[in-house]
Length: 183
Image (cartoon, rainbow, N blue to C red; front, side):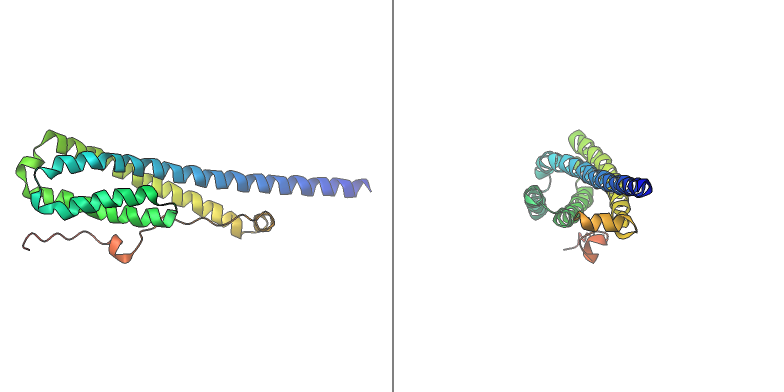
């Protein structure tokens, strides 16, 4: 009888440890996502300054500036990882276009405000890339726990769900931006 009680206690402890491990992993995923969210928000906070700086120089590029502003609004309203990833990819393309088009405006390129914003955006892009990688690593570890024995049993008992990886929204988003100044 005592042996049965010990076995039950050991099983309960092992189940509790696996459950706590799953909770800890899920919380790390949430934290990793919030790090991406913080960096994306920083980038979106820089955009109005970039748009205002560029506006005076790029009269013919109004559609690009409008698109950036619209993407910023859409991103603020997005609630899923996949939707934010899609908007992030679109914004990255639009920002690359602004930077490429800026090459045609020597006064803009030499503007102190523009170069400072460009550097801040470059730094933020590096942080976003790192945060994405960290998030995907964290999600992969968590999702692996949900699929491997014995934690998958505990995960299904307590209704743990897999998380989405942060991926480029489309094949088009994975391509380099092409700018043609001959149009």
